[in-house]
Image (tube, rainbow, N blue to C red; front, side, top):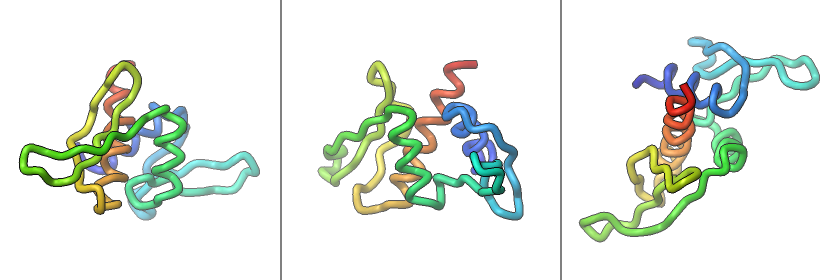
Length: 109
């Protein structure tokens, strides 16, 4: 799944009504004040952590089979939608959050 599809599904799961814009590489929407904004939790920490909160996702620290530190993103009913990522890799952590939200959208369809 490419970033466009991933963001569109995560936005749908989060109840965000918007269209993906290639130029801005995110979902464009109008905020509550009528201003255009771009939502991209793959690139923006604030968008990612708001998505984590709004989707009621949780994180768990642990180790993989090689003993490396990992964080797993988990949703309701122990739903684990994404692969583990290195706990020091914020880009991987944001992607894990978006993948978990997108997978939740797939379950609703």
